[in-house]
Length: 476
Picture 1 (cartoon, helix red, strand yellow):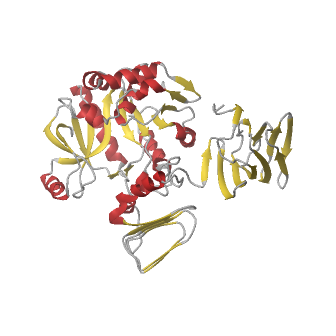
Picture 2: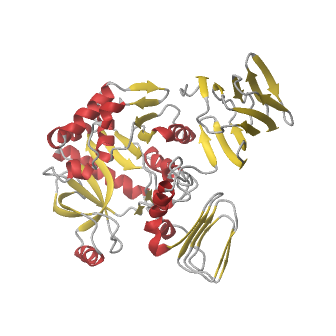
Picture 3: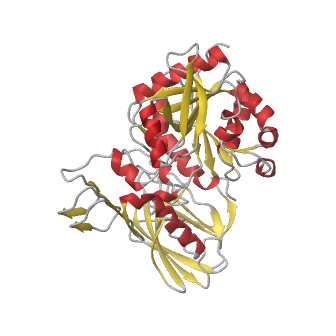
């Protein structure tokens, strides 16, 4: 097999519940700038843009995140991305199978590098070298490769891989002797001292056809359901929608369980590349720059006699006095206070919010749409006030509401407003009224963002009181 360029397959379907309240279901951690000024998804893509080993990426994503992901890729210069939308999350093996089936239609000999979108890798050169070694190994041995992270401590939160004998074809490639579940602390210490155990990174390099063959042997129901889903897939803008019922017939199972633990010659490439899966606030504290007292500070933060804390504000001031080892995270609608040793338990808060019918785990007060965003600033039983931001050149859907009227006040920019058959330009400090039942549309024809204060009034103000007649983004 000749060496083809490697196709990065980026898995972006997670929700990041342990990083609440910053990570929400509609805006999860991979879409946030947690480790750098770029989102974690963008950093993952950039790692493959900086080396000629790689082709353009393919992203496996959630329906709700599609426009945010497309915009973040556009910001990296990827104007026509390939984004496959999972009908629902079915774990990593089916997600990778969708990608493999899609790629095999045009390049059955391709290699795909499967990467979660929410990992930090600080030594990109080491990452590239490991991928190059893995490429040599899989081509020489017709195998599937995974990457093992050189452990730096007795970590109980990761699975481990024990390496066996050295394999031919790569500089640093070994037979996988054993996959090990998350150990207790005493066992993790023995792994660290042994020197042959590595953290399981969840990153893989597969020849496309070799992965499909492994699925056919070990998990044929995954292969058949994903093959049927891709064969009946529909294209929508830059998004590919696999057939939903076919995909849902797939078992929900990880790549490790589906194939890696069951094939005879799995390969592991040990690597020390500054890897962190940023699975909690304590993990984020570990990798970020700290002040002289060991505090990580972001936003409006004041510290007095406080040490080793992560203090992050997205708005309100945080004042920490005489505390240590805390994670305090403030957003517009929620504040988390947790001891760093209990950071893994934040997901229990998210479960509590969901079980009690609350919405603070679903979205922020700012909700992103393909045309821009809106933020609810006030509400009551029969009114709601929002601030809309419409990006230059964007247009909302042609729509109507059965239960609410709307008042739009332009505070910056120029709006093109359609109400029934009338089209008008509304300038700064001007307003317009949309009666209940009127067909209407809002557009920003200008070169700067359009900011509007929207006052809704009526008997029902839910987002589902909307009928779309025409939509640039395919939502009608």
